[in-house]
Amino acid sequence: MRSRRASIFAVLLMAGAAVWAQQEDGLVSPEDSTSTEVTVQPSVESRAPLSVQWRSLFSQSFRLLLVEHAFRYATEPGTRHPGHPFFQGYVNSVGALHGWSDGDPFYVNYVGHPMQGAVSGYLWTFNDPRYRNVEFGRNSDYWKSRLRAGAFSWAYSEQMEIGPMSEASIGNVQATYPQQGLVDHVVTPAIGLGWMIAEDALDRYLVRFVEQRTQNRLVRVLVRGGANPSRSLANAVSGQWPWARPRDHADLLAAVLPKPASRKTDEAERRGGVAPFEFAANAYALADPSGTCAGGGATTALRISSQWQMVLDVNGCKMTGLVKNLSGDSLSYMAGPRWTPPVTGQLVPYFQVLFGGNKLTQELVSPQQEAYLTGLAKSTGAEPPERSQYTQEFEHDGFAFAAGMGLDFNFNRALAFRLLAVDYTRSWANDLNGFTSPQGFQFKTGLVLHMGTW
Image 1 (cartoon, rainbow, N blue to C red):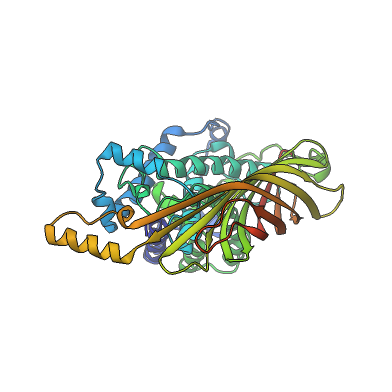
Image 2 (spheres, rainbow, N blue to C red):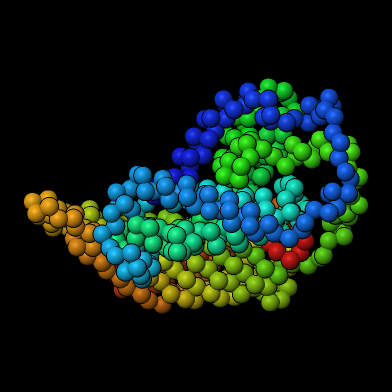
């Protein structure tokens, strides 16, 4: 599958780490610093540039892009022989995008692509000097750095999907069924940001826990790689050892560099009030009378008063329970008000009403027509037929409505976890081939980032 490339390459890197770990200039541990002489100009740190290192960032991103396209070209016959003129194939690919599902299995869309989003996000952090050395925690710099990385991850993802050097231009992937869904455009940056935060938390609490209890370099390398596969791949792309960490050098220099001015980070010192903006990456399921629909999406909320927010919600799911040779998906896009009661503590409920649209898309494959056209092509020496030649597509759009409530658990001012959100959904899109328009309960859970209070 086209998105398996990132995860496979990361696994290969971790496998090679066991060999590289024995080299002398490998992992640097804090304990080794006691016997190491370091001569440093203290003023160098203060003269470090704070602007983003764009040239280095684009160079490293281009390397990642080359690795991904090389893997695609080597493993996908359709990429090597798209069957379209270059420019017309690109136009057809971008113009054919619709619906949610793109035909890839669950682990490709919801594991492989988030890893891609995390890798590109880490490339940003390597080239953002202002926040390069931050670690997971309650400090505002960490969350600012990850939001900046998430924005770059979205830009990289869009370029990989529909940009000048993308799956749309090289191979014209989206021009043919079933690769026409929008799932990767949402999942890659949204869940990729959550993936980065999860790896950062593992690095601080699990990896450091192991490093405090063993001096074995091989064990340390394997734990770092296993807990942070996306960071390991980003390290390799940027020219570092896969197991490298900024703290390896920071710990060595701590004894000779002047300590920075202390920053007051007490909760009382932070700006109070509620977050003016929040972003949530969702895992999503819809319980419909004709079957379930599972997928994901994203939700943004803009605070307009202490208790009211305006919400924009985009979610998509892949239909289940359809007859053989029929696949489909549902895409919902809604907006509306949300009320959050004035409660204190870590558990915060909300109630919302959303209005918008729902789009149902289905594709019916005809095996008989496929066999006939394929046999005809073989007998005449022609190119194999495109999937669109033996696939029927069906689409219905309609008004949609959702009302319900959710419960968030706030870890701190920046991060929360959506324990559960339940909305009753009603869609007026016409029924499609054994799947009724969504009418039932939808369930969400996910990670929520609060911005503006830190």
